[in-house]
Image (cartoon, rainbow, N blue to C red; front, side, top):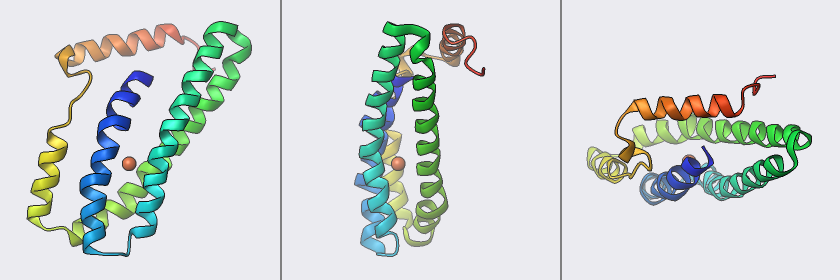
Length: 145
Ligand SMILES: [Fe+2]
């Protein structure tokens, strides 16, 4: 999961949001500037939070059960942070983009995002993602406790 977050959202998706969607929206209106600035800071903060997750995971792997609650706290904090980030994009940025951007803007944005490289695309099909899910569940069998 951490590998995926590093390779896809952090390295590809977020920079494209900033380069295409946010930039074009800024050219059309200043009504979202404060939210866009906040979202860009959150992209940077997200990378720091993933590093914190990696450290918490390593501490758990090295020290064992005593570090489990700290790892869980980091995971929960990251999930809440990211849910808030998504909510801002979905409730403010995307509706504004629908109001202000032209068809030509959307074509350019679609092309940019359509060219995204999925780090798991070479796996070929969802069966491998099912294997990954099973591995995660096996690795953390009591994650809900
Ligand atoms: Fe984002």
